[in-house]
Amino acid sequence: MTTGQSDPAHLDHPARTVQAVLRLRRDATLEEAPGQTGAAATGAWLLSAPAGSVALPDTTPGLLAVLTALGSDDRAEDQLAPLVTAHDGEFGLLRLHMLLHKLDAAGMTERAVRLDGAPIARLRQVGRGRLALPAAPAADAPVKLSRFATATAEGGLLVVRAPGSPLALELSPAAAALLGVLADWNSPAGAAELCGLPDTAVSQVLRLCAAGGLLVTGGPEHDPEAGERRLAQWSAADLALHSRTRGPRTVTGYGGTYPLGERFGPEPASREPFPGQRIALPVPDLGARAKSEASFSEVLEGRRSIREHDADAPITLEQLGELLYRSMRLRQTFTGSDGQELSDRPYPSGGSVHELEVYPLITECVGAEPGLWHYAPDRHELELVAESGPATAALVESARGSALMDSAPQVTLLVAARFGRVMWKYETVAYSLVLKHVGVLYQTLYLVGTAMGLAVCGLGGGDADEFAAASGLDRHSEGAVGELVVGSRPRTLRHSAGVPRGEDQS
Image (cartoon, rainbow, N blue to C red; front, side, top):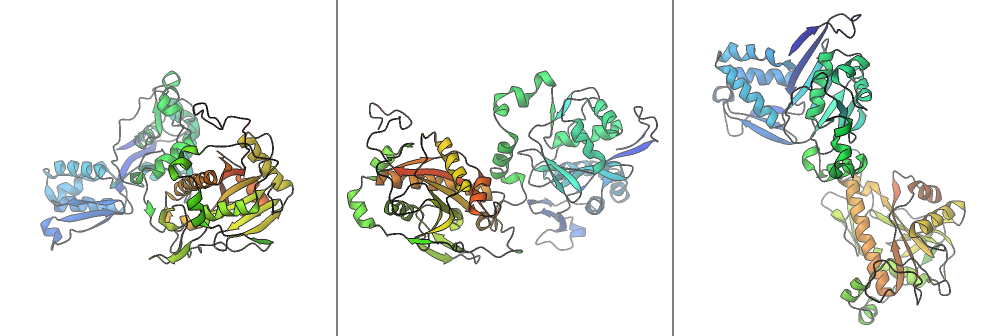
């Protein structure tokens, strides 16, 4: 649609031209269908993109001219009709309508708004999904930007996305002010006046916003994102993470795509040793343990979160070493088909990458000095990272408070992730995989600790900055992702160990 208009709200502006245009998605390619020859004569073409392809078996010369034009630049729909009729006559117009519907349904198009010949907004595919443009909202209808929308800067444009949508809205600096205006309820006419854009331009941009799931309608008293429990319970960050990692159709790359494979080499299975003091840990006799310990079912049923430690008989270095050996040790390494060094440990890890490291923060342990240590799973050693001081004291206090303990935990196991181990291979799901791995490590430590008669309690959160300050590690390369407190279990618990289980609460 091409509209030359004088904006009544801004009479000092000359008439401005607004166009609603479309083109093929920029990563699409048009080629002869496989197994066909003379595609121009047979009309057999294939339109492909990273997210999929669509067969075009009956492409007439007029439709081929349209596809060629849409593959090179933006076109208004009224500019496409002459291309068809020049080759196919008036009967080609129905075919044109059907083609555009098919391309939108297959997610092969981009829609944009041009102001005075320059694009100010573009709705593009970043995944796989239908692009359906709704009607423009009425000039006086209340609208608002979704509170779940996220915006990033990419290539000089502001890119806005809604969780669960395969579409991204690109806004030029000329249209970016519209987001600020839509932070609260407004009408399209009011938004146009506030951001200095023609009414028609704002109306067309809002159509793109609505198609991308970015627009909320209803008004302050009827806001579904605030009034409906299913939406009100989500934060923007949580919903974005959930939608991206559980929606492969909403992203370009998902899973083991090796997004950094061409730029960086894989990281080794074991991190570089720390230069400080080392303590060799004794290796437990697993055969003897298997004969003397309770059955798996008994251990599983007996697992509890225990927030008390026996001050009269603290955990020993031998016990701590056994817990780490049975839960974390590196049993073997091998090279994957992609050249990445992989490892086998007692708990599972996606792709056998095993990016997690454990840093015991010792407050009281017989046989080891207080401080922040690192467990080297390949050598079964403790390495001193930092002696006790204000930075480690802050970590201890955070763990004590999170565990609701009356006194400092004897040992806090700080779980860190070497992010490059996962992110070198996995796209979109990398961080969610890290969190899954933290969960299975938690359960492994819980069960082993329960079998050993130790007190284990997983914590729900921690401070990555505090860990970075104490360890001296870059939080983006290796950062804290989990915490557990571990210690000796008292003979009698003063407090309930979680959920009541009959009369026995010990």
